[in-house]
Image (tube, one colour):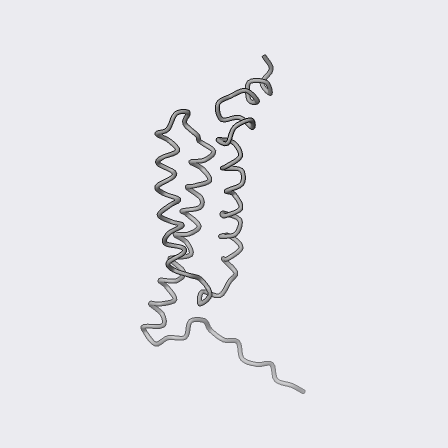
Length: 113
């Protein structure tokens, strides 16, 4: 059997949900990376906390089920990682605001001629 045939007929191949669920879940990672440019005031800490928790829980679950689904574990790990990064951004902004410092250094307006 060819390598493609083995992949096609494997328990985690494209003929099963074990392939398509992780493939579609990469959209959450892409959305999380897209939020890196979003102002921190627009990021929901509760939503990011739930994404971080679910990412880490399902990463572990993906490795103990039969068949082990490494692609699902990978995508869940990155869902959790991007959410943890967003939570760190929120925490740093909250800490800065609590200290009474401006969240970002503002550039002076350009002088008009």
